[in-house]
Image (cartoon, rainbow, N blue to C red):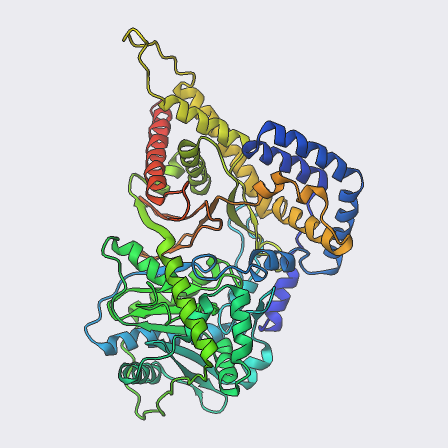
Amino acid sequence: MYGSEEEDFQNLQLKKLPVPDLQRTMDSYLEFAAAIASPQQVDHTKGIVRGFMEELGPRLQEALLDRQAEMDNWVTDWWLDDMYLKVRAPLPINSNPGMVFPRRYFAKMEEVADLGALFIDDLLDYKEMLDRGELPQERATSREKGQPLCMEQFYRLLGVCRTPRLNKDELVLPTENDSAEREELIVVACRNYFYPIPVKAVDRGRLTAGEIQAQLLHAMVDAAGAPTAPRVGLLTTMNRDSWAKTREILVRDENNRNNLELISRALCILCVDEAGGDRADTDSDTNAMLRAMHGGGTAHHSANRWFDKTVQLIISSDGTLGMCYEHSAAEGVAVIRLMERALARAEVSDRPAPPPVLLPAPQAMKWNLTPDVERTIDLAARDFDRTISNLDFKVYTYRGYGREFMKSCRTSPDVYIQLALQYAYFKMYGCLTSTYESASLRRFRSGRVDNIRSAHAPAKAWADAMCSAEAPQTDADDGQKKVSFNLYGEQKKLELFDEAARKQTEIMEDNILGRGIDNHLLGLREAARETLGYLPQLFTDPVYQMMIEYKLSTSQVATTTEGTFMGYGPVVPDGYGCSYNPKKESIIFCISSLHSSSVTNTEAFRQILEEALDSMKLMLQNRKVD
């Protein structure tokens, strides 16, 4: 962690994350389990919980309390390993989100370099502000208003890289020495070549925006005239253990090792793409997101990436703009803040002024690749193209209403949309499923997230009522219409909705105030691994596996710049990823699933979600009329 004493002081002023009450966590665990598991399974799990609470549970709770006393944050290291660093799945689609920026029109190549230079110039301003410790302290705006928030994630964006290792990756962060003694550089990816460009030297200060523009232009012209590059970037699309093994071979060569070191400590990767890569059967928003997430396939831009890098900016000559970010270092809020600032400043900045003296032209990295590594790259290309073709993704803007209507219903937009997702899932599958929504823990030192669970009994009762009310009448055998009694009148549906919204709000508040159950369960599990050397039955029970298999992985990703949104893939083979961005009069959803699943379908889910949102408006308008 680099930063000033002031930044460290801010962190020390924050409270430590509490260890939640054990009995309360177990009670909540059983309550959530009852919404997704059968009564027989829950009865069995109740017995396991009773046994766990007799001796093992209190013993492990003591271990967590000891850990809490000793550490700044008792769960963050375990959480980071479990959520990211120990996960062996490839990063693109499975882990790295994509973000789309408003499309631009470029009349000539110089304008692409102009925008890239303005982005980099602003990131350098931002980095200098961080180095001086001048990042403004943010404070909570609701629930304990005014409480300072942890700013650590904002220091973990530039100059950060995830390095593949066997069994567990390493998150490489810059140190104070890096900032003081080394030059700052960026890496420009163009036509699958990587160009390291020093942007700030200890002896001569930083490059002007015009000098950066000239360097970018050099790289673009050089790459355009060069022979086909080796597609080394595709190695970062592989299974993490496979990539770790291949990386061990690469670093035996000093030149390769130096390249990897430069990429790792670069402030960011700037991916300059050529036009193309859009699918003819897909709308422009979805195409832009696919290019941000995975590059559109190995025939297009996928090799012009380095997916291990925390910040990858993407500028295409056809005006498609965005970024792909490696998620382990920071949550979306820090990334969005960084990029929305750069976008806003680029919008009002003059064109970079041409430099009076041209600097030496940047040189593309040269790689020394063995035949085995070349075969591995070809294999990675084939596998990644297959993964890309398996992704069923849709950017969907719901235009029936937005956050203003939801607020007028005296409901938090986040709570409202979470309940809409539960209703849609129930309508499609006749049951609820374990649902993940990230809850910020920035009120606490080194806080990341816990999980706001929205699959609970009140949500299930309301969704069931909504679906029962929609059930069609059936004819009797004699052709006469049966008299159909709607068990759920409008008033009853509203009461059930209010109850579900109250429950959802309570769960959200518990999480952001450090009383969530998922981190606590993770801590108990990892404490058992470390102190007992085995997992108690609580964590081998099928119900626990159901609870952590998130077939609905969701998050609110709000942006203020029009035309910006973020999306990601599903986290399990038979699940959905669904980010949402509530605007004033609309909601942008990014919905994903996999074609290989026989039970999921992105377009079907989109349609049912639209119907659910429409039905909710009708239900709530009835109340407003009353």
